[in-house]
Length: 321
Length: 280
Image (cartoon, rainbow over all chains, first blue to last red):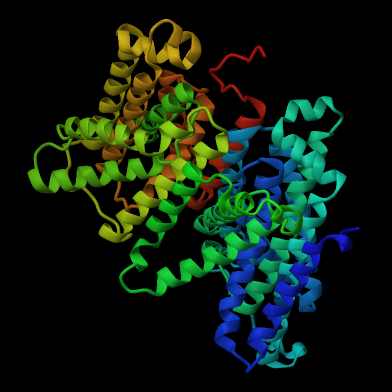
């Protein structure tokens, strides 16, 4: 069914371009740029499942990425597991954690939920900073031998890059699939009016818990891959509150609720940010500019870039979802 | 432990600002933390320029906070009052990012402190630093003043009326826009004042506001919304808790305990410990 959506093929083309460009001429610096863009798209797309589809603001989304990184790195180095296996297990473990958190805090509505997610992020960070097997606040390092099974560090980096691109494509396909399913329709109903949705037979508690847990899976896998690639992890990098918030900026910028909106916002914001951070005069002001951008979007264009595009070309809604 | 009590009064003051804005206009003010940080730096700059008793400087900071609050209200908040919660969260958060960004550019993230000490008081084997006592007394005085303002003056009553029922208040001839502007101004003034008080106790950076913002959330949730005096008491309780547990466990565990408490209270008592159960 999803194969009949034109947008499915657009996603495949985007992913193919991500694979093709850096490979063409073995361009490592382009690869490093694109990997950040891909991570931004993964985070924004999965955040979209909560904010855009269900209408629940999650300020602590990054906690999944960081925890995934920790579990993945722990399995890959200390236990010596295969990379793909440890990333998948990390995703599963984190999803399970999310389900438990979700059952506790999803009874809260609106702003209370948003605040509780900040609480979860802080609590997990405090816990990991004091957790001995994960190296407390100094974190963990990857031993160089762990790259050996993949054929040395060079090849290992390329392999993780492809895996991350695959996760990016999966994130967008997942968003598309949920959007076009009955489950997605239930989520939209919760977003519009939770009480009415419950009256109409949507089991809101179960729906919310499932989507919270689903939105944790791919970011956790991406976190495991990314921290494996970086070779080290510590609590302040893994659970950076700022990054969680930037995810929200990306989503609002691109347009919440739309698959392409999340991806577009993620990609564009990441490019903008790396431009601002490297420019000598503006590097101190990247937060100011991001904040100003967010304010303008919220006040004047709540639909984001994609909303503006839909108004310009109404028929695009059918193709670009 | 007594120190915890005294610091707690300052937490309470910070939470009162958050609680007031939340209760009156149903907006969670995410600029709160950056305003606390601005209060710290306002105190630092004023004290460096004038070197007079730091607690006298609270007065200009309160006025500055009021004005700044009004500016922020018209810049970012007025347009999103009554729209979905997501919008007001995001717009106040955007202002927060801008303030923190500018602050980081000016002062970087290195620590500062206000070099001002009052003589301490010694009772038996214990010595209480003068700053802690003065900060606690200032907090209580300001809290009392706010309580009087809200319950005795016309404007204060108007604020409570708008918090209760905005449409009904409009029908009684209260200009809700004016009231919301004033309430937001007072909320920001409280945040800046508490920041200024904290700056006389501990060293601070431009990012410290976030810690106190989270503490304010915990306190507000504990106290229930729109209950300024409840916030003061809950703040003292939180300070006490910190004071009691610190000797037994590492300081780095404190956030975990606080936020565990926060989530538990949110889930178990959505109306706050001092709040009454919702009837709806």
